[in-house]
Image 1 (cartoon, rainbow, N blue to C red):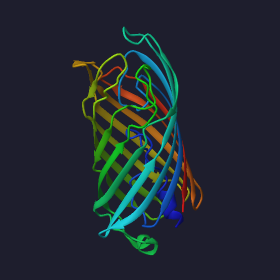
Image 2: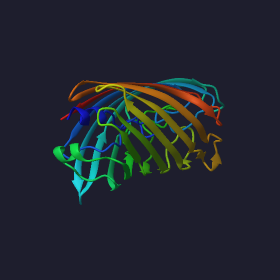
Image 3: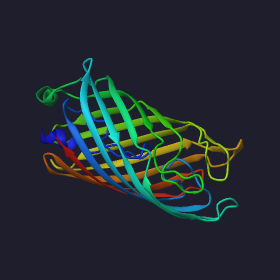
Image 4: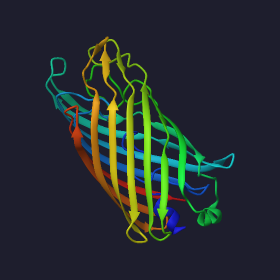
Length: 296
């Protein structure tokens, strides 16, 4: 059981920045509560998917995720509900946005469901402990519900006033020994957005789909200590305001590192730091994430 909790040590927070060990195989009947703090400096909006040029944006995000692992038709399935609260502030110099003020409030909550397609059977604790893991493929669907705080007269908001639908195919390869497990996660996703009908200083804002690939290679250095190398690539997501392209297409590659420690069988801690290393959109992005995992 210690091995199980060491593996299951993360949860989604923002759709484009989830972190390692989110999609690993787990026993059915397991529940997780995962509080997360994220500090981010960039030139992106609070939801981290619209590039604002030129701008300096600082965002603090507080996340509380609940996840439940169940079995459906012999396949592992997972549901999660993620309320998000945050604070965002910044400065910008453009013709339409002379400045960005600080905003605090509730963000759009995230709900999601995934189910195993290949190599992810529904197993209870004893069966799970004996199961030799290999390649796993999951189907994922999620959505950001547009009920976060939003005001059209404010240029920088916590909420988005539009739906964001996510479709993904998370893949996991588990190898290494039981005492020193190694996991490779590759998570390709596409985000599709509805229109914002009340944007700042405009009538409507559309957004092109965004394509994201997130990958993590994690390894246990000791029974309770593990680390991960993290990668995230994003392209697309340009906005069109009143029919005019905003020339803000995302195109960047970010790298990071995560260190995790299992304090108790049911309590894990982790810290992640990362930033942009290659870009085609002149963007800036730096992130610090602190996370706790409570399992029961």
